[in-house]
Length: 133
Image (cartoon, rainbow, N blue to C red; front, side, top):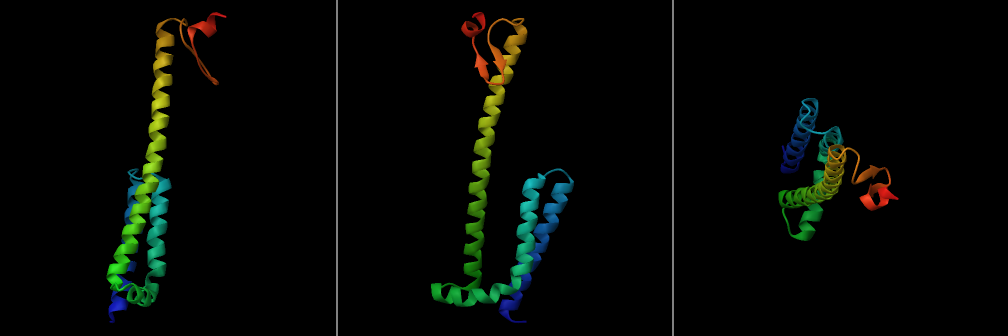
């Protein structure tokens, strides 16, 4: 078995393991289907493209890297992109949680005051001065 064939087999094995882990985590409810499907697709892509690792040899030679070094660099680049995407998603969710907490606090105050004070509607929050009109 050549070194490139060995690398291809390792990449395919890691891809198959990633698909398996993603499916198990989704079935147990520990990973949202949205993200689990994405990771399963990445694993399947690794299995499908594993034989193309021989194409990395000329690219690695041109860059002065070894094939495993280039593969690791590509993997790290991919993980950086995943972290960036998850950071963007998390930032959006934080804003949604903050807005929801504000609405919940105002709804609780409205219920406690018996309908006096701030009111909520679909267009936004209205204060006492607007309600009195």
